[in-house]
Image (cartoon, rainbow, N blue to C red; front, side, top):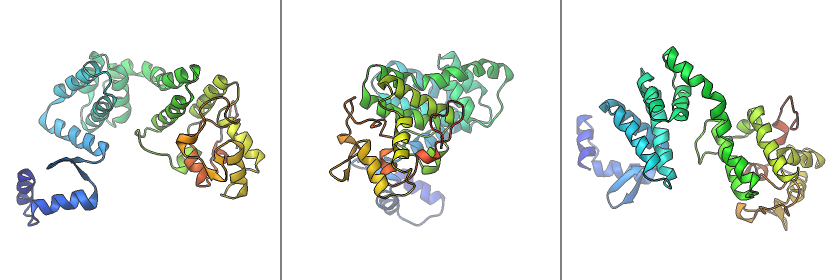
Length: 292
């Protein structure tokens, strides 16, 4: 509170610190009170951005990279903490006029994949020798996105595979975990990645599941573009409706006794309920399994 009061005074603001804090907490929802008189920003990205800015102002780059090291070795089960440092480092590098030292530091610490992502996010030029070191990682970074999805599908852990499908597709779009897709993002999703996800599902299920299976059913139901009886018929066919109601996610059947084209569902179920013609927008050449 004292820190906020001092900041307001420096800005010649007359609003009491307690009143501003209450407004930020109750009205703007920028802050949440985790413990008594202990506040933090509600959105993780905001936290990461401000942390990255503060670290830059204080010249604590080595400290930041050391924190990354510790997060990888000390707490193997704390995935949220790892994700937070991962995001903070990417935002930090993106804010730097000269990102070379930070990217090189990541490579030296064995975090080549993170170094590559930082390079992709910065608008600044990096040294040619550093670029030459990072460019060969492109395919490796792309392939690594699918490792967990392939493993879950191979082991027929269908729910985990469904959840990982969301994670892969969010990552392809450069969005954060917890974000959702817009209709436009689904319509224009990169073709190569869409085909790859579909292929993995088809191969693991002997063509029982997959986006292409869902689109075939959608077309058999008249390719509805708005919410109507054809949409509901589609939901009935793939098993996303029961007794006239759309299923909640926990009611989805995650095994091969589920109806044909039942999975994946986590990416699309809410979109289908909203009546958006997602499959009509999946336009892919080449293999062409999802042609509109």
